[in-house]
Length: 314
Image (cartoon, rainbow, N blue to C red; front, side):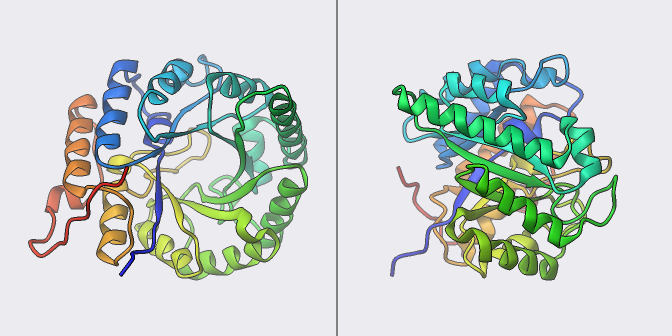
């Protein structure tokens, strides 16, 4: 019986590192990336193209992307908050560029210093620049609109669902290839997640395929399961549960890559991940970030004796 595939996008190299008060050397980032690649992960959000003075952790974005692209079968995602960053991401050879837009007006101003309407206009400029590059023979890069604080905001509080739906529709009209919803601050619960995803899927169809959940309040995996049940098959996760947004107070902890992979494989889905190798990658990360707390459970507990280990797929 063929197992249904589910894709995990490792975002730790971007979302995981951006909130830390230390800078991981480029060589160590590539060691981390290569370890997860050996474990079967093929999609990485490898960097963010932002001013180094704002996020010194991302100053080597182009070098990390270049190193990542040397690995076979890899698909490199990067984040860019504006046209300048997206231009650099395109030049570096990003396969997917995520442009962050916030459903919360307060978070939008704090995070990217734009209103929601201005952020949609910036997205349209990025899409036009990408399209012009393709016409000139450039790399065909996918543009994703990442809608952050879709389930609530630590600055604004409640974010009306109608605002999220309207923003998703505006992003698609602006030229985004896909939209994704993010629980940036870990406020979401499974019922809310399922309800809002269904509403956005009604307007986006198969252009809504992925999800980004934080585990701040312990519901990250439950929220993944809620949208898995309605057909979402791509999930962001961070090795060791690292992560958070510097401009969203209280935002901490993505879903741990190793825990998500274990849950999915245990349920009979095919992630292409070798969990033993992924746990080894988490242990490597612990040596690269001495003193940093990692939150993944399966690495500490170990795999069940009866667990049916899946082969790695190319």
